[in-house]
Each structure stands twice: as structure tokens, then as C-alpha cells.
Length: 474
Image (cartoon, one colour):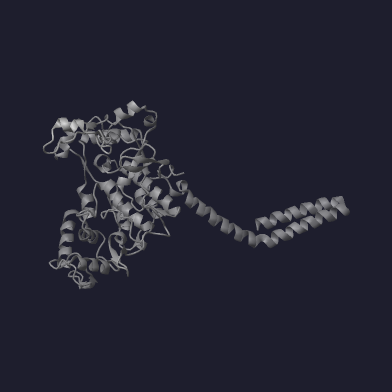
């Protein structure tokens, strides 16, 4: 069931006690491929593949939320591609070759001052020091060789939590993926940091929206300075609009504690007069209304919209391959949609040239731009209750060509059956008097016919049957 809904958990665990560097906890997990971090660079122009991956993510979150669980750290780094069946059948040597071989670096000790190499060799090697290092496996080789399935696997449930018991201090998801209720914290009566609004399924949905933008556009909407809260809120106000309460007050308190008197943006002004409308409107908190209007006007003159997310859609995708490579990937996907297209034929010189900005790389916009824009903006809302649910996301027009959620999400089918059962009970109670009277009449007629006239019994049974059919028809 977990595999069906793209959830992957460790299958076993064990401890390695009494090691030179302590006791180690080890997990055994299914063998999986690389994460989705570089997905858009190679596959962002294949709209059908982008939708295929994104729809799986919605299904996975919908399943988790239906089961009463929130992920808490939902982002491409925690989403991996599954591997094809051929990899499962590989021997050790074949798998090592598919990963590009094993890189081993011998460890040597640098002799301190007044010590010769001969003295170092005679000394005993420290027990806690390894003799050599093994390099990390090059997971990108699996994509290059076409060994990755198009099915995803959600991992890392280390900060997951029940829907009804959200963590007070947050989950620690990076700021550029964190919703406002996670990133803008406040101090409680004991002086400890806590979330402004309780976390829940809609916190996962915000992170899902950021993941959508990264997979489809190769762009993080709130990543201007991912370690600076003020810069992240600045990006949020450009995309979502002026920050409302209770985030407004919480951010001001955070700002005062930072003691930045030279910054005049966080002034105690909430409502200002819009120069264009002439009406009182909520003021942005991280910059002046005049500057806010100027930035939006510059973006609108460039792409027709006032937000940087729409600007990225208008600019299009700068792919990490040439036109010929992109066309080859599209042909592979059209031929076999169970695996990721391979791009292993690309020579190193071409990749270097593309990385440096050369080559004839295609620039394509995400498919159904207006529909995709409507989808992500229905997710990016300040207040959690204003964001769309996973069921609404699956029913969105951008996913119109995906399979219907009711055929694939069992929890919804369960709710449907429960609702049918409720109406069935009501229907049964309404028709119970008629069915009871019909039953007793039939029993009386049969018993009476046995002790009187067999012919009358046959006639009475037939009349009761006809009457029963009439009642059921009514």
C-alpha cells in the first residue's frame, strides 16, 4: 500500500555497538535513485513528464493526510526516483559499473614538527581512524544510463507528525520551502520560540507548491536569501501580497530583537493610501509602498504580470541540453513512460559548454502557463485555511489529463461508500413499515392457505407477490 502511494520507509534497522567511534544506528532501505534536485534542468521542457511527477506527489500527500500524518519536510531533496527492474536483477559488479565505479582515497598522516615519516610508520594506527575513504556514489549515472523509473518515492519521515499533534517549535524545514506559519515564529510566555499558527496539512501543501515551481520552472519563489527571514518575507510579499496578522506583529517583534535601526522598512504603519486607487490598503512590511509599486510595474512591463513567479514563466526554461538532446529526451519519453529518458550520450565538452552559457539550448515555457499560474497561486496564501487541499489540487485543470483521483485514492472511495451507507440507512428506515406489513401479510396468507384451500393459497401467494412488487416499485 505504501509503495502504491509512493511512500518509502526503512525495512529494517540494527545497531553496531562498541565501534571505535561509538555505537551506530543503521537502516536498511529499498535501493533508490537520485533525488529531484536537478530534474528541471534536464526534463523541465517535457510537460507531460513534469505533470506525471507532480501528480504523484499530490497523490502521496493526499494519502498521508487522509491517514492523519503530515510529512513536515516535503521538498525535492526528500523525493527520490525508483529504479527499474533491471537494476534489481544486477549483480554487485554490474551495479558498481552502472554507478561509474568505486572511488577510493587512501588516508595518510601528516607528521607533526620534529617527527619523521619513519617515526610515524612505527607508531600504531589510531583505532578510530579509517585507513581509506570511499567516495559517494554518483547517482546521476543512473539517470544517464536510463536505469531510473519515472515513479517517485517519498522518504525522510524524521520530522513527520500526526495532524492533531503538530510540533510547537516547527519541523526545521529550510526557509525557502517553509510556509509563513513555520518561518515566522513568536515567543511564548516562557520566552521560547513557537510557531505563529499551528502546523498541519496545509503547511505541507505550501511546500508542495514550492516544489511544483522548482520542478516545472527550475525556480524557487522564496530563495533570494534562503537564510535571511527578512529576505524570504520580502519574496513572499512580492508573490502573495502584503503580510497580514498575526504574522505582521510576530515579524515586527523578531525585527526589534535583531536591532537594525538603519532599516526603515518595518515601520509601525499598517494602512496606507494606494497612489493609484486612492484607497486605504494594507502596506507591505519589508519595503515601502512606492518601492513595491515600482518593482511590480517593472515586472509587469516585462511579462504582463506583477509577480516574479509569472516573470519566470514568461522568460521560459533554460535547459541543460541542446535542441537535439531535448528532442531525443522527448522521443524517449513518448516511447516509454515507465522510465526516465536517458541522456548518457552527451559528451563532457557539450555539458561544459552549456554550463558556461554556450550552445543552442532550447527555451520553452511550462505547458499551460495560465493554468499552472492559477494552480500555484491557489497554494501560496498567507493563511493556511485559504490554501487549496490536495483533493482540489488533483481536480485542478492543470492535471486534467491525469487519471481521476476517485479511481486511485482509496480513502476517498471509503468516504463515498460511507456516504452511500448513510443514505441506505435512511432509505431502509423510511420503507421499513411497508416491508414489515408486507412480510406479515405474506406469512399469514401462506399459513391460512395451508389449513383451508390449496387453490386459495396459490392465489393468495400470487397476489401477495404482486403487491410486493408494487410496493417496491413505489
